[in-house]
Every structure is written in structure tokens, then in C-alpha cells.
Image (cartoon, rainbow, N blue to C red):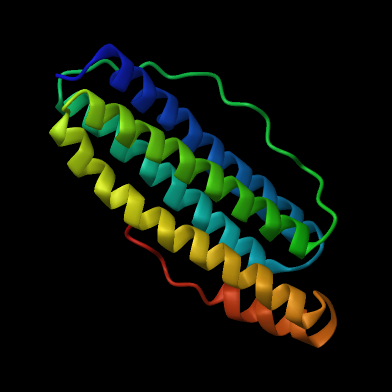
Length: 166
């Protein structure tokens, strides 16, 4: 079992992960409307990955005899200025998720909650990958000017993303 504070933080993280899925789906929908189906597919897959993350927290709480309490999920933005804006927001969001996971790790450390610390190691490594991926795409969009043939090539490249087991 874990402390009430750690359990509440884990439940709050489920909301963060579900919001992430919701936000990526919103980004996907926007990209579909501007005919960037490759980026839309990438965002949709990212949303599915975030849903899987939420379920990892959900299952972990249950496995430890805790109580999952689902919180309300805010509406994500629906309008974006450009594909660059989409990925800059995705990167900022991933950085916020990283901060949240780091805070849970801090709470688990203070509580000597070793199982939670161990479980969070996977998420800490995952967040490095998430930030790197979004950051690289932001830089590619900046280098390409975010339009024309370079944007179409990037759309095609991102659309070729393989399913992830995360």
C-alpha cells in the first residue's frame, strides 16, 4: 500500500495521461482538417500511447491495493495556428507531464515507497523519449519553414510511424 498523498498523485497522473490522449486526438483532428493525414495519424497513435500510459497507472494503483478515483478531464484546445504550433504545444505538454511524474517520484522517495519509484523509472525514461521526439519534429518544422514540399515530406514521414508498445 502507499500513502494517501502518493495515491492521490498517481490518480492525478491518470487524469494527466487521459488529458494527453484527448489533446493528441484534438491535434489529430486539426491536422485532418488541413489535409495532413500523416501528422494526423502520428498524433492519433500518440493519443493511443497516452491512453496506454493512463492504464499503466490505473493497473498499478489496483495492483497495490489502492483506489482509483477518476478526475474530470479538461477540454483540450481545438484550434491551432499551424503544424509547428501543434508540435510546440505537444512539446510543452510533454514537459509538463515530465514535471508531474518527477513530482510523484519525489513524493514516493519521501514516503520510502520503493515499488512506486521502480514503476516510475519506466515513465521517466519514456518522457525523455517523448520530449526528444516532439522536440526533433519542432526543429524539423522550423528548418523547413513549416510549409510547401518540406511539410508534405514530413507529413509522409510521420504518417509512416509504426505502432508502439508503450
